[in-house]
Image (cartoon, rainbow, N blue to C red; front, top):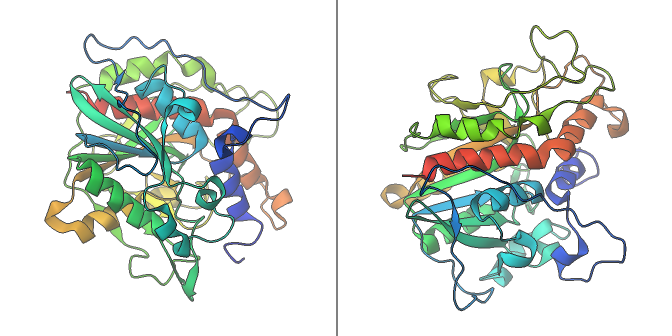
Length: 383
């Protein structure tokens, strides 16, 4: 399957765009159209460590550089953005309150294919500053994506504008720490819906447009440390939202949990899984250039702690920056748990029940699981 033909990339695009409204594209909403938004969250933050939004005055132009900050946090999808905003920029709705960012956007167009999200929405991203216990943070939602933007430059090689964007953000923010945060497919049998994995490693698992790039198959590691001081507090905060992570009481056993005979109605108790403590030291997050997810039979647990579509680019950029690179962390929540590998697969895509359930879980739980990874991100930033 060509990466830009209907099928697996359409499923990835469906995830990226899930929850978009016409207002996101600068158009007025049709009467009666959807208005998805997350609820106000009542989070009992430890004293003095609650996130406090830090609006810029005057409001920046979309072509202005990003403000400097101690930490840069980058997320990717609409559900992830909403979860991150409701946790780290409380009271500021991302669609109406986050600042739009299109600095040097025109110079990217030759690297972005027609129909890609960034072209459709006309910008590189959106952002908002916040503070956590005196540490300054810039939260960014990227419109560039590893498997959505590329223009082929040869067999298994393609443009990668998101790498340039990551470097641009780092150059402007000048952070000491960069965190990539968002949803992921589970690979570990021990990872339930809503769990969060934190790792200092990411690996390219390329089989489509980047299969022959020099970085394909490489693992990148950050010298940064995973802070444990606030993990217990973060886990307690996550527990308050566990009632939103009850799996459905209908359909076939779509998810594989060892020792669990019936999946319908399975109750999840979200926890934070840390590299070197809860899974093997150095086990990376897997970054694919195609829509992939963990199943009970595909063995991805031997390769990585989760699967997503972008994090290894941070390692690639950090390597290119050398000694000037900030430390970086991957924080990913399980939005689709380990899928039952005995379910039928396509083609056609419509009969691929494994992919169907992976996307269904994301659309049902992407927001609430993203709240958890945002809380875990707070735990890595709070002093």
